[in-house]
Amino acid sequence: MRSAERIVSSARLGELYECSALLRRTRQRAEEIVNEARAMLAEAELYGDPIRVLALNAQLEEARAAYRRILQAYTTICRKIAEERSAIIMAQVEETRTAVNGGLSGVA
Image (cartoon, rainbow, N blue to C red; front, side, top):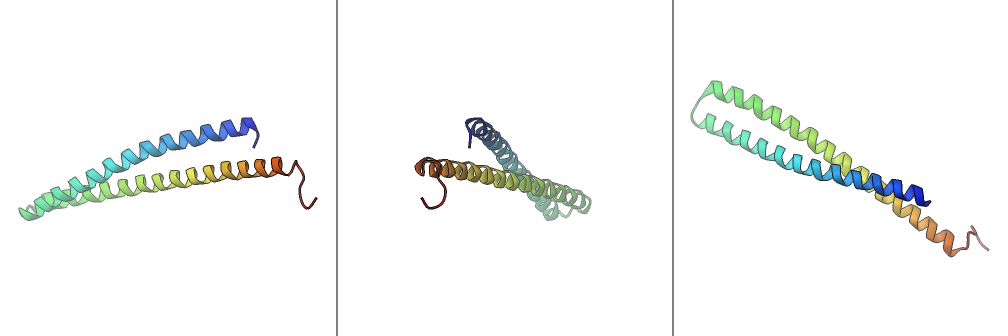
């Protein structure tokens, strides 16, 4: 991997890590919201408030759907990070192999 490619790849990896951190915090907050909605629904069910139960059930489903989308985005970012790191490592291994072999390939 040439120097310019390494810089670009490292910058891209840094951006992916930043996105991952943001999505991790968003995922944690979405999980809290789902738990809060679940608790509110349980309370409404406990007090036997059918109209509120219906409304809170819909809100809980919305919160769960949003959480799933965030989780999917977080998983995608994590996969991209792994792919980028793997590409960087493979390029470094190839550079080392080339340097050790003196640029020769195959059996000398």
